[in-house]
Length: 91
Figure 1: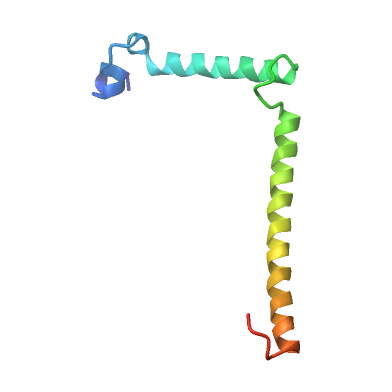
Figure 2: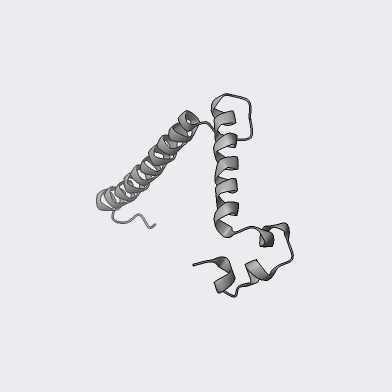
């Protein structure tokens, strides 16, 4: 299906993208993304994370989530046991 067979606002715009097919535009964007990522991997770009940094960030976020969850469970358990030991104590 070509872009011309579908009426949409994206194709009818007067921008430079309207003169090229969506498939061509997408492949150019993909290529640009790959080049930027390769530059990040090579240390030429400081504004993007390398694959190693991205994996480490993912691991740290997961660990942070698990630690917060464990802290919440421990806090709830301490409140429960504190009320069991001292029933006159109000929360």
